[in-house]
Image (cartoon, rainbow, N blue to C red):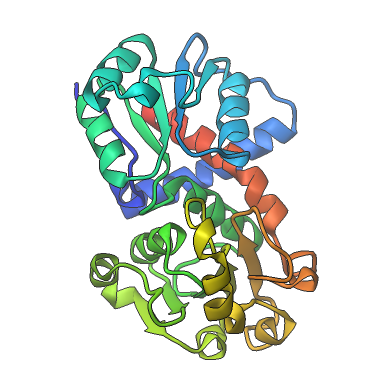
Amino acid sequence: MTARHFLTLTDLSSDELTTLLHRAVELKRLQHQGELYQPLKNKVLAMVFEKSSTRTRVSFEAGMTQFGGHAIFLSPRDTQLGRGEPIADSARVLSSMSDCIMVRTFEHEKIERFAEYSSVPVINGLTDEVHPCQLLADMQTYLEHRGEISGKIVSWIGDGNNMCHSYMHAAKLLDFQLNIACPEGYEPHSRYLEEASDHVRLMSDPAEACKQADLIVTDVWASMGQEDEQARREAAFAPYQVNKALMDIAKNDALFMHCLPAHRGEEVSADVIDGSQSVVWDEAENRLHAQKALLEYLLVE
């Protein structure tokens, strides 16, 4: 049987995504109650990291441990990929020794090729184009705090990056309105805009984007690999800081999310990220529970 991969959020149907989010809430409840549930006993997750991460590594590794399985961390120094071995060869070998592979890398084409030659499910832990695992956690967090997100207004403020692309996928699958405010030259890729055109509004004014918003989301102004653009990006994004004035334009009970790590005083003010409307710590924890739901979905018959 062909392995089921999770490379973008759209590898799930709307119903599958909704079911997975509710299952994540249930798995979180079980874990908080101390109930033992080990559906992946003796299963192995190989984790290939070409981009470093705190939350991705810890959440997948902890999730496999809680499920009774084991996770193997592989940095560029630990694999022949870092020495030029063809992706197809690495994929064949790793998938012959593990039950699932998580890859966190730069080029999206690399993970697509990895999946093409893998005999087990491949999970996208992040590429330069999309970050679907983070969206599972974000959507679980909204579900826990406010219920179903269908019909709501979400405001994305800042760079039209991989997180923005995955929010566009989520808007289409879960039927919410996504307002995107970003500076000229930093818009999301046109292909993603076209795919989600019925659910996305692109604008330059962050205040306009936040009107009647139920959720406001942002991300760092310079992601990994863009450090040399920091000064130029700071100048372009300065008017796009999510601060109290911007939150006040949204609905009174609007939530704030950020995938972390955050730079207080840049993309978000300290009083917002540390304030009462921020759910970033639940959002971070939910990486664990949402990914456990994903692992269960991909690996348990």
